[in-house]
Image (cartoon, rainbow, N blue to C red; front, side, top):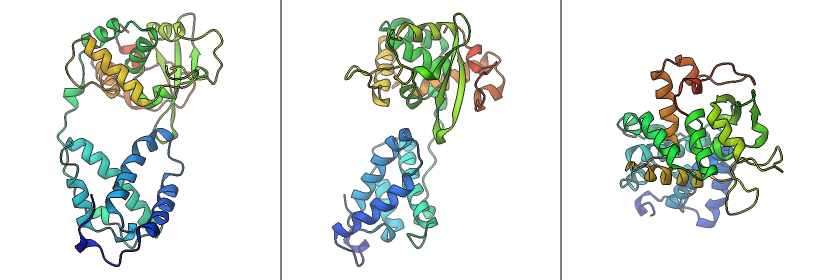
Length: 285
């Protein structure tokens, strides 16, 4: 889709608008985690195509509104996430002086309804999902997502060097999260056992824990991990469109329900030997 002709003023030839966009996108993306750009870049490139042949400094509020309306078939929360990415790029371009004003600040994006409660699976459903997931690798994934409360991207990036034994039969994992922030999390004995069960005898410290079936030593990506979770939920006859993040929501909620201090479900672990973790307040995993 393209903006209407009425919005196009003194437009350059399309071939002249590409380098400007590419330069701003490149410096905007600098330093952002690969997992973040995996989500952001497709949105920004789609927005760039939508605006062609406008230069980034020629984008008006009406263009942004039309772009937002083009996603009317999606859920409000998804639209909000996409527009937040676009607004981030425009705000950055304004701060570095590449565009005269931040048009994104004028865009009002409706607040989606809070549907968090609908995304929290009961503990019995989590246990059923784990029980019915018999492939060792896949069971280790669903156990870890719930027991540690980590994101799909953190699960994808986990290496054996990030998994550390704590005693005879339990351990901890260290993950790199949003903003390149590292945290270390204790995992249950059963989760640690499931991880050790899939560790190859010749595994190197830098090897990924969860390997794609498409290639040796190639880590699973977020999409593959999401597929594992959805297939596991279907086996458990759960009709909802379950994603890995549902396990993260369930982790925090169930831990709090079982008496975990609020700080354990929200704080970032900067030390390498945590003595307490919200995972200790989960039952049956």
